[in-house]
Each structure stands twice: as structure tokens, then as C-alpha cells.
Image 1: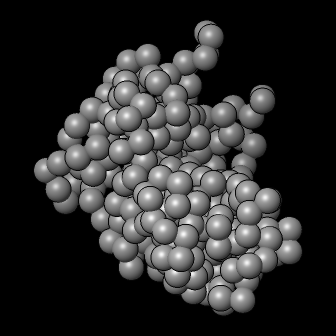
Image 2: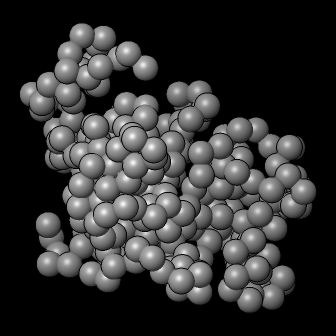
Length: 256
């Protein structure tokens, strides 16, 4: 680690649903200003890892620390303060159909941060320009935009408040390869521009290698490999090799 105190850390985190243990004493951390990508098969706990960090799920055991302070079990008011430091790009963009593009981008500014609508619109348009969307889309509605443009709007919403931490949930799902590559580059650009700490989950290995400084593989609720993005293609870890090569044969079961 480049810092004595990680920006975000999961320490011995266990989360289960019924008899199924999704996270099993998970230990994972990310240093300030670094971009970590979590990869792994479906149902291995990637989304649960992020939801626990956002306070949307409470683990049965362990601590999740932000700047060294445990955030598990925060009150509603404390959780709201936490959210003010975080930006999220949801899978599928998750835009509000009834709001214009600029209102989607500025939703948090208006409804949580108390920014005036005039100022919020200005900041929304600035954020749209950062993701290479022109101001003329501001008064349109999500249904009028392509999937790639909607994803850019979702990214603008995630970065508009200049958060300390950014979460990206399957940022390229449903996009064609060319659009996905453009979104990956935009994400990388914005993380570096803001100097934010980023945590992403994805099945897209090209995305992982573009937006991640480091990559960690989650399997059976634990991290089984972690390394620089550049080592993803060369590691001899059998789980990573099977995942990267898309082979049915190997230590990862494919009975699901």
C-alpha cells in the first residue's frame, strides 16, 4: 500500500443470505487516489461488496472503514453524510425518465446539497461537457438518447459533486465494443482529473485493464488474487487464467 491508512477497506467482512455465505471474511483495501477493479464470476459477491460499502447492506461480521473509521451501522444521518463523499455510476445508468438530462445530473446537488437550480444547471452542463456531451442535450429526456449517451450522463451525475470515492457497477454492460472503449477512457480520465479513489466491478476484462491501477479477483467470497492491471494477462494463478481465457475447465465451477 502507498498509504498507511487506506481510503477504503473491508476487514474480515462476512455477509450471507440464508445459508449462503456470499462474503467470507473478506479483506480488501484501496489506497487514496488509486483505482481498484474487482473481477469474478456471477454470484461471487462483487455487487454485495460495493453495496456493503455504500451502507445498503449490513454485514454479519467485520468492519468497513473509510479513512480508518468503521462505517458499518451508521445512523441514517451519518449515512447521508457519507453519501455526500461518494459518486456512483450504476449499471444501466439508472436515469430518471421523467427528469431532463440536466436535472438527472444535478439531482444530488438540488435535493441533497441545497444548490440552487440555476447553479445546479450550470454545474450539470459543465459535467456533461467533461464527458463529451454538448449543452444541447441538457433539456432532452433520457429516452431521446442512445445507450452510450445515457451512460455518459450517468457518469456526469457520478462526478458532478467531485466526490472523494467513485463506484462503478458494470460500467460497460450492454454497450458495443467501440462505445464501451469510449466509456472506459472517459471513466479513466475523470478518475484522474478528480484524483478520486475508485472501486469498480466488471466482467469486461478490457474495461478492467483500462480503468484499473490494480485488479482483484473475488471467488467464494474472498480475494484469491490481486495485482497490477498489467499482470492480469501474465499471472499463472489458475483461477485468473480460467476466467481470462473463458475456459469451462478449471478450478472455477460452472454449475450455475
